[in-house]
Length: 80
Image 1 (cartoon, rainbow, N blue to C red):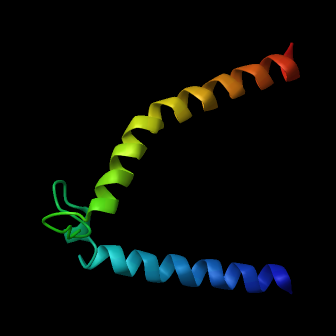
Image 2: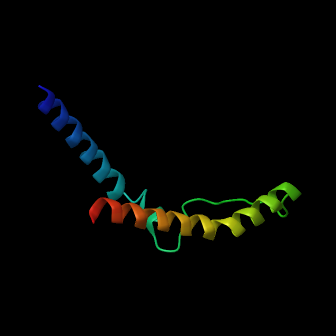
């Protein structure tokens, strides 16, 4: 019974998916160079936001390097 219900819903989703993509309603969003969303940003940020941005930009490479180092150490411990 569960298999029949699963097959029914799979066929239902496939049918509606084919209809959705074949009638062109999704084709505008899939064209190359077309934005899916429009993001609005403020003209200027507050002082706290600017401080946060500077801290993030200064610490992001350190965090990425630390993450890479931890992965290497654990890889050596687990697989060697």
